[in-house]
Length: 505
Image (cartoon, rainbow, N blue to C red; front, side, top):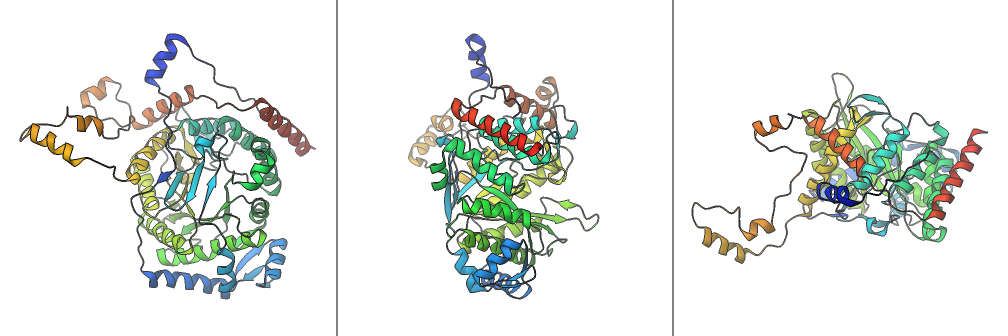
């Protein structure tokens, strides 16, 4: 395992100054939404999508390109012809009926444990980008050091609940060994909930072995400590690699985000109703298969929805149709009583500019208004998810705090006390100095500049990109590594070293 250094201790006057200018993060809990969700359809509309999805699975069928899965489906009573599986609606609904509507996902530090499902929403890190825009703003291939940095930034973020497992694809580590470095460093550098590797079934088994070192075998057997991301190949294909990992995690009672990756207009119909019908069929088939492996195992109905430019074929984020599709998926998830996942804060822009802000906001609002439970890619993405920007990550993470505040809803307020202030101030006064104003301050994003032009210019006329890079550097400079018992750290290091030698042979 590459060396992971612990941040040094600070003392004396410098520490006191640092504490004033860089206060320790005040971590936000699982978001308990009190705004929304929005339902676009009446019950007849929900039934139409459900029946159309069932018809797809019963008549067209779905491919499971995996011999074990095909044998499992055949024993369960599905119609199997070659790699095509046709599933009757009664069988499918019986299988998904035992998926819990929510679950608790445990962190190494219990204060960071989260709840997934119901009115709860959590924010998870970026995932899988092969490029980064560094602290200097320059685009380059991502490295393991970048993954370490994004784990650290997630640890320090007040609103990032899940650091993930693959914030970037480290191009300097051989593919068969990447999961060893990523899982072990996520466990060491953060004490928040992490995700599992799905590179292949070996990586999934190694992930379980590592979390058992940290949490204990009995605890992992009885509790959720991982949620892993598995993608369906839209349209209508579940491949062997994903199914192998699904079997490993489901057998261990660890949930997965079962997710069709939808390019509306290319891999799926462009219309919201048509696109959602197809992806509902795909993901319900995957969830049903998980219950053949282990009845009652938690699973998450997942979506990753982009539009496609009819001019170039390039993916588009933040356009209206994917937003409407997310609203529909949320309503269907509530119909099936399943927790669900989506993607946000992504953009086709190549810099943290106005387009990036529009795309990110336009993707986040529909997802939260749809009642999404597990929100992946919550910070940093550029280039249609091909790159993570340090600058945009820092800015997005601050925006998550604002979303958390908005969707927490209204607070209790004593209007009788406010009437006294109104009577005292009277016509033409102001409320700047009242107790009510001091007790109810507007939430401020420190990265947004509301100074006069003259003050902004005097302070260096910094762009949003510059401000984000400065903030990312500040976060990393003030990172504090959470403690881990020495025996756990040593056991992890020994496991990684042993496995690395095996995979080199």
